[in-house]
Image (tube, rainbow, N blue to C red):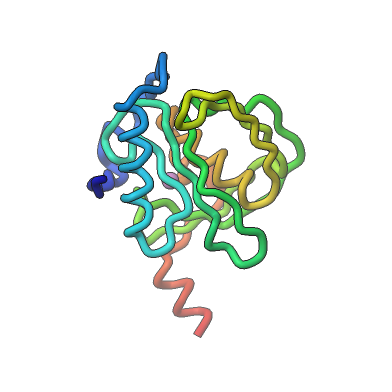
Length: 165
Ligand code: NI
């Protein structure tokens, strides 16, 4: 187990396309574990993609198990692909690689994701709401896309908190 350093916006590696895995081997499993360990030490992260820890491979972890309303996950996914999507929703997103910023992004309301799990078994996830947002956000990372590229408006987290007071 290892907590890895999270790369931040401005780092060129975050803009590169990640390579798929041919097989889910120990190296892939180790990467998933490291992603999970790294995610767990963050305060409010719900997903992490391999390029965020400097590895250009198609692996993501999504964990909504701490959500009060609809706890789901954690999901450990290799080579995730959105095979179906429908509807749209606007969500205020943040990203561990873009500290201090939030933005309003339009995402599909529902997505169906196919991937391989830790054991190399095919899985299909039918997601809606927040899970659909997070899956779509993390899969974007694998193609070098950050939420700020898609956001209609970007806010400073500090300023938003100031307004709420
Ligand atoms: Ni992100």
